[in-house]
Image 1 (tube, rainbow, N blue to C red):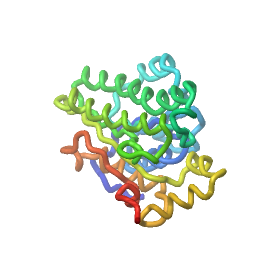
Image 2: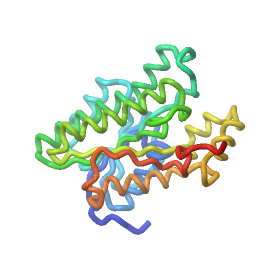
Image 3: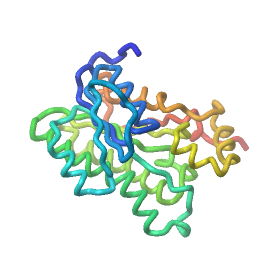
Length: 247
């Protein structure tokens, strides 16, 4: 793929959730831009490239996250993409184990990673760009269950607060808010309920799920210098799903 953001060349990029779906696409597109990419996942990433560095890590384990990432040099771009679904469970069907698993994976891991690299950037007096993975469930119900929706709402608030606290130091953070994306995670989620999958596609104005690369392309925009005046934004990428339903 031809580079479309020349300013990204040689940037150091960290992507969580890199083994599949959106995270894998983000890694590949950043590599296409000439970046040095560090990918984190519990599962092995099938990405072969001289400038790709895979780190196998369970983001649920706070101590392991700190021990593994603290020794790394500073980063220019952080993509907090790792996340899990909750099978659309309402609150009464969500036990504490599921609640903690979803919140720890989707939100706490983001907090841990951000704190490590924000501190490095402040110490080095260098700018840092953060792209956090929100969701249409960040501003509406029905995009997930109780735990997932709570985690995605919290991500938007956390991202805005990061800008408020550190924006004056040229640390900026924005959110992507995808709708239904055709990934392994969503495929597994809908395998047992094809009616739900078809209904979601029908309720999307363009009648289909998005592809991971479409979300990754938006990541490049938010990571590049062309968006340097954008702080604390939430960018919906949902094919019109959140605009409303026909009555």
